[in-house]
Length: 126
Image (cartoon, rainbow, N blue to C red; front, side, top):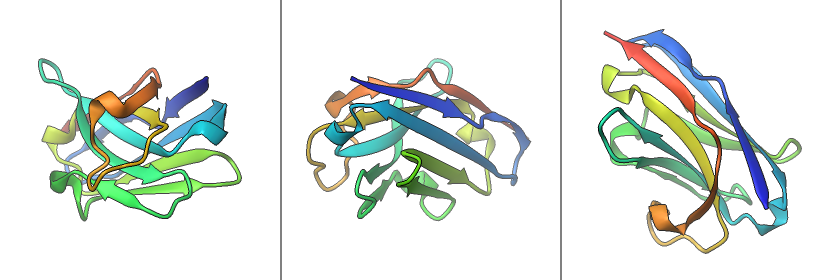
């Protein structure tokens, strides 16, 4: 199994920045990629970004391209999501998740992700 713990959420004004972290432990050797998803009230959980565990490839949902950056600290088995130029529509609970299988072109298939963190709230005020 893989255990995931998110941290770093909070309240920020529109245009501000937040950095989320996801610490992985357990059978990290089984991880192919780690992704960030988010879920706003009344909406389905949606893909935000992902990175292969080797750190060699990154993937982003179109609305966050150029504003969010995903990166991995190999020494700490931690993946960070740096979020800049935040908008009210970025408000959601953010979850990190891992997958064992190879990513297609987009790496965004919800059903391919196996382990999930508990989530961290991000609120962007206008």
